Image (cartoon, rainbow, N blue to C red):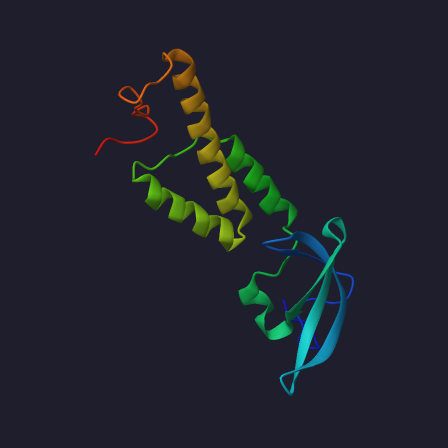
Length: 149
């Protein structure tokens, strides 16, 4: 939601930036870049001792967003507790889909990825525990994790 000043965030707002996590809008500044004036959010990340400047007009496309609402967090936790739906596609295609979901910044999509990967990890661990030590000729994944070609 945009404020009266046309800015989505104001000084003091807690925000999330995909690559760095939760930060705080410390200021909104106008800086001169390549001879042009550019309005930027100054976001500080105390846990990384870092300051990031994000152009206000590019904030949304850069992934800068406000913290998730309580109902979204509740849905994400419910998703994590649910049953994993692992698609029977090539691992490279699944990896692309997972990366897209993670980069979207959508909490529920990220929870789906965590749930799926955790489920695959549990299956692999169980399979490895039951199997003899693998050799080059016996190393095959469990069918529930990776479909045959």
